[in-house]
Image (cartoon, rainbow over all chains, first blue to last red; front, side, top):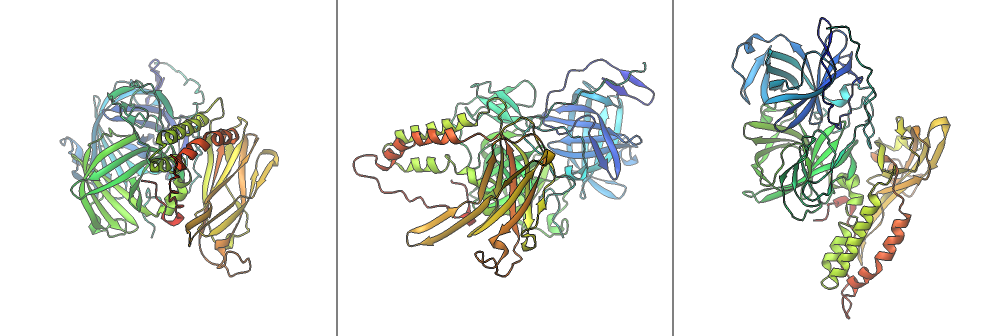
Length: 197
Length: 438
């Protein structure tokens, strides 16, 4: 596998192959976030006590980030400087609210996870066995931020909880027995979306 | 450190459900949300399995009889424009309030999960929210919700698969807020709070999506069998034989695995009558074999006819005119019904490639008098759904075997001993109040 850093590419040996899953994504899948075209370059598979999720490393050539696929839903997150209010602060508690730049975020999820497999290109070395502590926060309008604690320090990511229909996917992986939903159309009346006017 | 170019990525194989063997009874267990589900209940022996890892672990070994819910695990239906597959089912109850209800966990690999909740005639489709809901009574997304209920929901039965550690006797506190037809539900378990947004559906919508097959064998035959006091064993042997026959028929042999390749719901009005509606392109796998087009429409004392052209590579065209009509009424003999809200046509040999469908709809519901083509047009919306399935099992041999199997159990059912039993009162289910059999 190949690990990307700002200096060069490092090869760190072969990793155990990922167990198969139903994800319609693959390395090479394209997507659009706020008008910018991204490509999926790699994946880290994260396990916690009650399940697993995929973190897909995405890049548009300028602002690399992550597409998180958990329980069939998608979020996007981009690395940002740690806000002063979170620097050195105690680890958040479930249900607490934090004001970030005028928007109120609520701590909705706390968990510890281990990377147990990866493929493709990733922005950090030796991800397998990497243990990360997460605090996920949501705003009332679907904003999403995540605070991460690992051996190599605390990181902050900012983004949004997004919908399959809004990501303009192309080159998806085929899923046996299923047809790709029609492109770009939000399904009418589905409770995934807020009530219409 | 060196310049190493990334290895060439081979195209990933198609994603698929996982099929494993139950470590307790050896029965086959399908995990549809492969890589997401962590709990699966074996439908053969009822044991609970941990399927979160490649190595399947037995959590609870039990030998109990499982019962298939009214909408069977694995059944697919098109609901609000999305095709869903039933992945899990749980019964829950609130002892303090004396309530009990059913929840189906629906899965689509692109759109994730929904919960279809049935409380008597009340159906709600929920989607988990990933946003904060400060206070529904203070307004949320432009609607003002009022609290409808609070209580403790206790799980009393689980079957299928779940993305959490689903267990009988799990308890969470629940609160429900309503601004009809929209709902918000809040479930709290320890410190974790999960909000969901729901929309009320009528039984007819759910019946159109999941109805036509849910009363096949499990409903009608089993219910009829339970009415018989005598000849019960013969009837049950018959039912089991038919079920086995059905099962054998559904096991995919070779490449003839049935797969839905396309589905779409059209919302039309009288302005669309006779117009050509075109679907987006979809791919029919190049594995040879048949192709079925199923048309569904919630017609009631009415009809709809679709002029369908299936156009494929090199303009190869398959034509059909499926007609859906359903009539229901009551007369001196009781209630009667005729027709169905679903119909299908099968093309025997369809080559693979990219296809699209051209559909010209004609419907009685476009006019004030369905029988008179010159009658005034209405603005009534007319919805219909088309589903394209590859490798549909051929039913010819099945019906022959069924014909051979049925007569004796049926005879024993109606004539358990010398005096004939009274004719059971099996009245057809009216379409507008569709509800799965209890």
